[in-house]
Amino acid sequence: MNLALTSKKIVIAHRGASGYLPEHTLPAKAMAYAMAADFLEQDIALTSDDIPVVIHDIHLDNTTNVAKVFPERKRNDGRYYVIDFTFEELLRLNVHERTNETTGQQVYPNRFPLGKSHFKIHSLAQEIELIQGLNQSTGNEIGVYVELKDPSFHRKEGKDISKIVLNLLKEYNYSKLDDTCVVQCFDKNELKRIRQELQCELFLVQLFEEPELIAEIPEFASYANGIGPWIGLLNDSKCIELAKKYQLKVHSFTLRKEELYGTSSFTALLKNILNFHNVDGVFADQPDIVVKFINNNH
Ligand code: CA
Image 1 (spheres, rainbow, N blue to C red):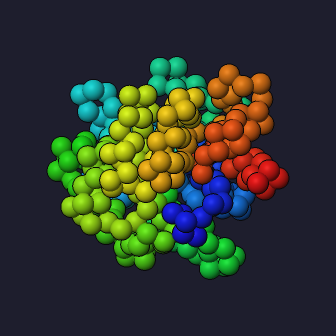
Image 2 (cartoon, rainbow, N blue to C red):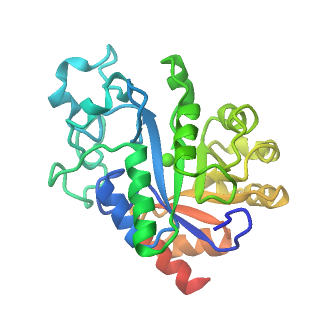
Image 3 (tube, helix red, strand yellow):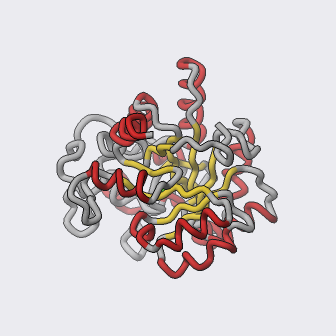
């Protein structure tokens, strides 16, 4: 699918089918794939041995049992960093449903029960191989939607996360605008660098969540193909107006049935975002519900 040209509304499985299984686990990705999401999302951090792994935080604290397995490996701030561990070490951890930093309770109590079953961390390469393997065995063409987490933190630690991830994507044949691969980032200087200095030709999406950044959409258009505004920003009509004016696709985050943003039901929220605001794509924790809504309404 050429994202720049398509008029189809796309569903990006946010951290996989994270509404049903622990985020960023391969089972959550396989489930999202089977739910016919158009893209599966990968958040990326680097290990000490430069392996891109699929995990939302640069810390391991809230989704793994790291404190139990490696109690002595926390930094002075009390946190365990992905970048302080080799990939092989990370494989010794179990992954669980996300917990609240202060209470230790799971963030969404009705989701997959905490500490049950068996989930592990995996690398970006392993996830791409799962998706490409399923693309071969099903005949579908589901894409990867990669977010580079905190490039400036990685740089301070002596690592160029963008270069490492783009090289890996290239190895798996993702390098051109119409390849089924998107690169997203909150760091605008880094995304600009990815386009201009690293000469990346992939579809790039500038994420943002602060209202004052709406005014910078024209600047985003100089290097990105799309924007990823937080859903709450869509109420400012300038956001979509500017995106349309500068021919940027809008992929908004995040739809989850646990958060209604002041609407009366999840269906009402879907109507608001997909019909009224008419965005081009959404990140969703329950991709099945959004896929069904789009199939019935568009
Ligand atoms: Ca993300």
